[in-house]
Length: 149
Image (cartoon, rainbow, N blue to C red; front, top):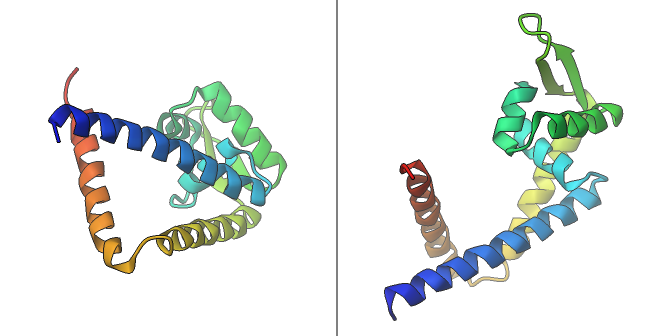
């Protein structure tokens, strides 16, 4: 198997895997009454106590205006709280409300459950090699992204 064939296979596999993962996330989001962007924000916020809108925009790779619209929806639904940063009034500090923390816990549980179901589709003897290979792939992609272009 040539290096070019392996690279092409990896390109196709990662493209298709990304598409299927986005479908999976959309399914989980819909099951919890969220838009896909709101779901991604929940996944980001559930690991942090609070973040400012600029940091959220940076991590989600979205414009500040788009993040504001997502946050407006989550605040309106009662899942997020925001306060104006006293040092920079243009900057909002966002955190999960009590209702948002409850939903984040449910979403995280559902997310893990989906992956348990997916692992059941794979032979147990392949679980560890799969996880190791994915860790290597992630590390290689991260190293590639750090290289100057």
